[in-house]
Image 1: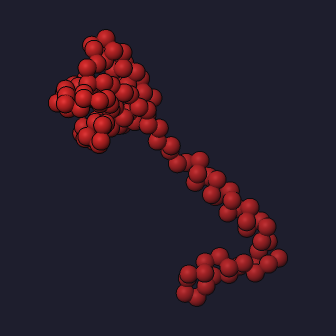
Image 2: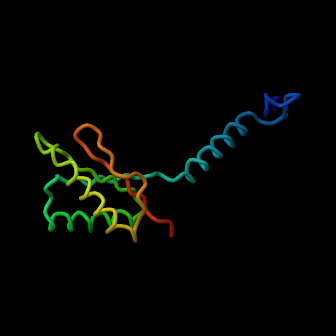
Length: 128
């Protein structure tokens, strides 16, 4: 048996006479239980170009629907190469259209925002 300080910040500090190895085992067990209960957030990326055609758009839309139904967040972005940065409006229109078509599966967490040569938007799944 050992004298173990349970709560050092309490006034006065709390101590117990217990088996120290058993105390450590119980602490590890509690930490493992807390870790198991946490939910990992998975972010799936979908990439568009500013000139993405309808078929490619619909194909990526179906994938995004599947990702949202699985509970993953979707990061949709338009990547501008070279002089295509002139078509910022097309990229924004494309992402907004994408968001409106996914409204029943998820909600927009962040509206389209231009960062360098990328315009990104986040969509999170709806709660069931």
